[in-house]
Amino acid sequence: MKVLISIYFFILAIIQMGLFLGIYHYYRSQSLLKPSFYWMFSIIVSVAGLLTFGAGAVTLQNIVNPEFNFTVANSLFYIAALLQVLFCQSLNREVSKQTKIYALASVLIFILTFEYMRLHGTFEIRTAVMAAIASIFYCWQIYELAVKRKTSPSKQLLYMQCASFAEIFFAIGRFLILVTSAVAITRVEQIPQILIIFTISQLVMNTLSYIAIGSYWAEQVVVANINVIAENETTKKLLQERDLLIASLLKANKTASTGALSASIAHELNQPLGASNLNIQFLQKKLTEGSVDPELQKEILDSLLSDNQRAANIIRSLRSVFADEKILTSKVDVADLIDLVLTIASPEIAKQNIQIVLKLEKDLFITANKSELQQVLLNLLNNAIDALKSSDKADKTITILGKHIGSEIQISITDSGLGIDQDVQTHMFELLSTTKSSGMGIGLWLCKHIISRHGGSIWFESFAGKGTTFFVRLPLVAQYSI
Image (cartoon, rainbow, N blue to C red; front, side, top):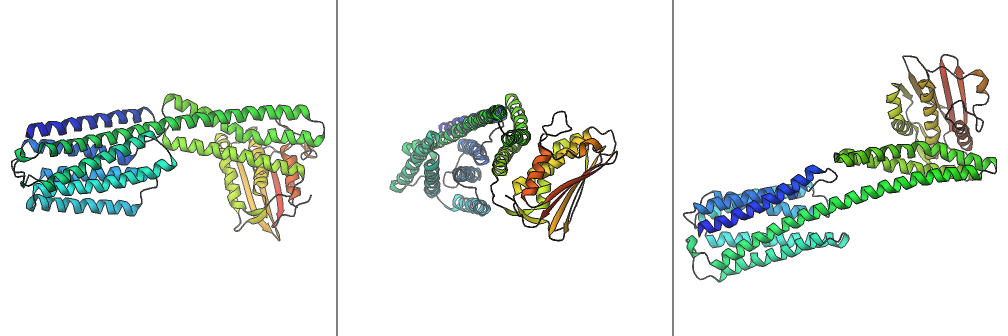
């Protein structure tokens, strides 16, 4: 009898360990989505409990007061069941620190209580207590799964619910068998066969629950892969639509205003959508290699979202500019805005080995349109970077100053480049006028247009061999000229 019981427990331990190793190998082969810590740790603890119990059953001499290893085994079963419940809860909401503390405290209480029952209780009391605790956990588990399935239907979660119902059935069955038993059980041979069958069946259902959880996680990995592919395809289509839109607008230009609008869209959207394209190519490469770190993946997806939002903001602000609409304003922290612009341009700044000198007074706040001002500052910063690209100076520096001047603020961006040729300085802010071979002559014209709409002014000073400074002066509260 004892050997047969041990074999049952060892077989279940081997099955659960095989499930764990299979999922762990799958996890190592991809890094798009990690399996739950609660599930992984629960199944490992369950395997340890099964092995400990199985080994103890072989050498069991006194079923009334068994050896200490039975306290260890049952404590492991308790921890495994608790972790499984926490996994189900984590599907709906993050497990709070307070809940974790309560869970840890309950483990300590259980260990002390079961050890007392091992020394002073009976086989019937210990088994009934374990069946009652298991039933409570299964009910909690079923509730959490039902809540999750309302918002995210899943056949795997349904299978787990069914397995949990079966576990409750066998746990309650064990309890009733002990309650209705008229004979005190003092030897292994006295354990009713039906009680052993119900115990093993409960453990089998528990193993099926682990299988359902593993299948649910694998299902989520497939969904995540599909979502990434769909996002890549969406971004590709966006890039293709951008090219078609630019081509169509350029062909349809019949007035200077329409021509300026299409060129502006091409100029302003090039950077965020170009950055999205690079991120997509990089993500596709990593997905093909199967080596996408979750943190890197999140960073790339956040960058794609940020670039797409920036592109949408540019389109809205450009439409407002050319339609001469008065758009909504908000309180803008100039220091934060400059920090955002520097973050966007940081890859090119690092590539060109440019030093940034930032000197900003405190409380640089204005009421204006944040998206339009971001476009202006980013254009001026990119122009400063471009000026330093062609410079052979060892010390490449961009200095950004911000200060209050009466009821206005002034921002200046200075590069240590070669300066602007005298013969082109008078045409700097004209539409379609550029000194760049790849430029469209839109950036500075658009900057002046936006600053003028805000009731401000923009100008520059340039000295041959010393560099160029662009100045932007804005009222504390934007006064739109329409």
